[in-house]
Length: 513
Image (cartoon, rainbow, N blue to C red; front, side):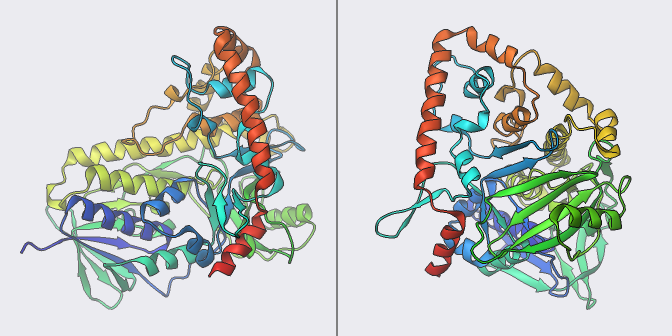
């Protein structure tokens, strides 16, 4: 019998275990004779500062038939229904970015443009967030679940939510669910490569053992141990357009009886912004800032002044913002933080890992000896475009009215990317459309207008005159959009009245265990 193709994931954690699960599942579906191993060291600690996901993570749990309530219990997870952006447009101004999309449930009339409900909202001077189910839930810190008379918990709507969790616990959770994945407790000392092809043939472990493989996934995080240190993969920097480069993480304990946020709080500060991510037991927090404009000592003092109490800084994280020029070199793919890193404003890291590995598994995974240069080039172009889209979307958040500190003046004057400017200029003559974002990921989730509209609306970057002109072209569609918008607002506010409080839901799920 032919020897199975050996896929080796270096590094566990969230990215490594997501990669292992997706590869194993797709190999089974394709009938590919494969062996999967994860090399991770129990000696390397994972700092659980709190992590936020997109709705793609819930799709992943459903795909693997993982019980969501068990996931909540085992990972200290909480709901993420959106992002609360404070002080970005200007100091004192707050807007939400709910992650549900009403266009999923409303069938557009024949010939209606995509995003017509968003266009109507802007034309009418209404916040696009109003027609989202998650908006009243965000405002009231509620879960997208109701409790029936018999005590059972039922979802309120058809929309996928996302999660906050302690990533150290998520890696352990996925490891506990692995069946048929070999776990090797070791660190990698060096790599052996074929002299002719340059392909990796084996890992040399810390006890000098050789560990042979056919294909390797680098999930070693910021260390980028295989793809950069060994394979010398070039790096594309986004430092010019995304100016924050340092993070000061800390925790805030949740007080007994305190209502728990169901959003990631992104709170703009003098030299960057602060995140607050609620897990069931604490807030994972941090100040992401530019060390061109603030020292670590100044950043700590600023946080303490804003919060009104002292904090215990857990580490000092310096990072390079950008991506690998090519995420796939030879027989190695970098995923997660090994592949790219953007400031954690829109939860792009785990989302990118899920999409990147599903793209590889569904469209490119085969016996490693059958992989071609064309496969690699095609994959690299798609993945590179995905991260570039993330960059432009995050960069758009910095097109603000703020000019009250040197950081914000510098960002406004010199750090807005040409693609950001081009898109915003185009959207001054026509409203954003789904067609502006062609799907180059084989049907997998990509940056879409439903993510852009709350941000563009919240920052005041959309033209009411343009939206009105577009709506006035079709009075029948305008009436339909108005009726639909108003009915969604009414329906979702009523549904929110039935929803459980967030902390109440999490307590109920814990009791089930």
